[in-house]
Amino acid sequence: MSASATAQNEDISPSFDDLQDFESASRGFIDAVKPCIIKDADGRTVWNNDEYDFLQGECPPTVNAKLWRHGQLCAKQGLFEITDGIYQIRGVDISNMTIVEGQTGIIVIDPLVSIECAEVALALYRKHRGDREVTAIVYSHSHLDHFGGAQGVFRESTDPKIPIIAPEGFMEEATSENIYAGPSMRRRAAYMYEINLPRASDGQVGVAIGMATSIGTNSLIPPNVLVKHTGEAHIVDGVKIVFQMVSGTEAPSEFNFFFPQHRTLYIAECAGHCLHNIITLRGALVRDAKAWSSCLDESVQLFGRDSDVLCSGHTWPTWGSKKIIEFVSEQRDLYAYLHDQTVRLMNLGLTGIEIAEIMTLPPSLQSKWHTQGFYGSISHNVKGMYERYMTWFDGNPAHLWQHPPTEE
Image (cartoon, rainbow, N blue to C red; front, side, top):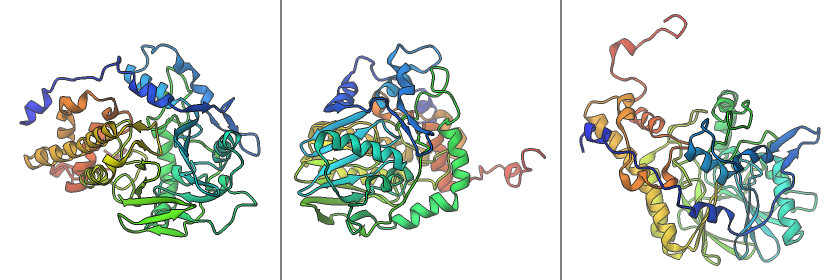
């Protein structure tokens, strides 16, 4: 396909009559946090999901209709049964907390951003499933929203020697991202996640992988078990977990993992209900879209036929082996297509900005809800892929050593 033909692809939007996502986002609902307003020890509100109640109404002209629909789905909060012995608490932070019941206690996966939110999430689970002790914690990857609330699932009776499992390189990557570049990233994240905008139909309506980031107390309990290889298996509180290393995809230290006894695949943040970021505006290393696609292909091969449920650290699960294979395969193709076409057009002599202006997805991907650019965008991602291969320089000598903005 030529560059001009790529630009002429007709925009094919997904159907608003397709309600499968609403069924999946509500499936297994048990109870909600009421009110869903979480405060810290000083009485400061660190999370308020109730601010998004306005999304229950009709979409106004101030909001893109597809984004409004996505916000309605992400705003659903509470405790959900995913399958027998596995539960998720969603909507009490930007990320999900997942709980797997073991022989003597519970395995907590990705304990949110803030200690306060993690405490509320765990309390909601215990209200309905009993006061079970935490017997293990799993961090799927090295981003703050998947480990920052860890101290909130500990209490005085918790055994300090319980397994805390993470992918190899976790501490190096968690510290390099959140400490080395932390101050700058936090400033930029305030704009990226629209922290200071009112939650309203003419303000902030969510951030696509959740509604917002909580602003409570962060923590980090270092892992004491590091997973190094795909296929590595551990028995944790009587539950077998088989790991797939996917470091260098959405995070520089990351794994997916499979529960054979539950026929459940936890896919970390490699596949979700929107296009993710190859380059993120808050700041991070440019991600490898080719490796990302390859890891998703491997996920299908390793676990697709044996999985009845797929869940992750954001948004809602998918049920049924056939649907799981289709979903992950389309996510795989999404990143592969953007990568391959960017490289092809780059080698024809186009710059990243030029490629971003003409790139569209093929109809088979355009028409799916989970490929929409709610979080990452085609334009931003293409520029990131170009930068990964070609650096920041666009080939124009006038841009080789530019003046700073004020001087220019």
